[in-house]
Image (cartoon, rainbow, N blue to C red):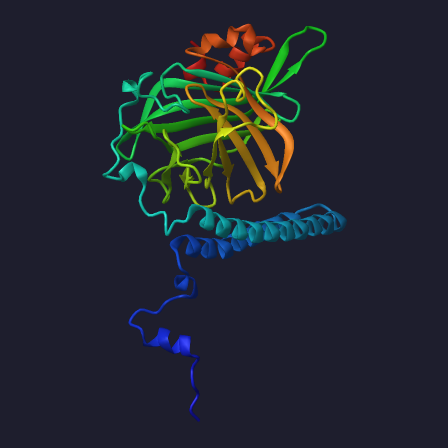
Length: 365
């Protein structure tokens, strides 16, 4: 009996190199999306098996059954998240219009990087300052309960042969004591960002060390990556002269850090303007669309004023504005700005003490 193989399968067998199904896809970006899909499912099942193992060590049968039921529910949610991430990665491929993310910018011979200490007012990126001492204070959260202090340190870190400026970003939640009138601050996230700049003013994200807290306690380092480690690559953080409609990766560490930015408008007016640093007063802001396939449906519209930088972010979920915003409230050339009344910081000396405890090498002097 003569069995005929399907034509495509025959072609594959006759070729000198056997191709796997995902290798038939048009781009490396699509191949990556298809490979990460089963990897996500595998991770979910690893977590499920570990959860079941822990359930068997509960004291009573009823506790064990309840634990296993919760583990099964979590697996179902994880599987749904994997499907959404797969769709989000494929959508990202359409937006990025890239084949594969092959070349790390830090090792690109066509890019000339500058020493961060040589950056001045004439050469700094108009949207991202890497001048040492520069400090921003943002207010965020659903009810403005979060204070975000971003400080450009004098430190540098060499990554892949490139000097990257160390920028410390600390998010805390403040709670005012009605009796004493003083505030207490609890950490949400403490990040050391490593950022480089080229001779054209473009900035690059070399990596970050992210410490994430819950109820004031360190819980994980999720989101951390460094170019050159574990296949991670740097990304273009923000261009000095953005191109309308252009999108690019800001970081590349699969499953850990996959932020993407798209330039939407050069003269945009947000729904909720920043009263202090107003897009309306500036004649419109640079507007970007920021998202990551790791969190499908969770996005941001960010707004920048040239010479000032970031001034406002609007949170978006499932295509709708949530009403939650982050706003720039004050900025200065040193940490002294934290004492400025314009920053409206409750108990600034206590905030400084908290920052000192969290990052002593930066905020204690």
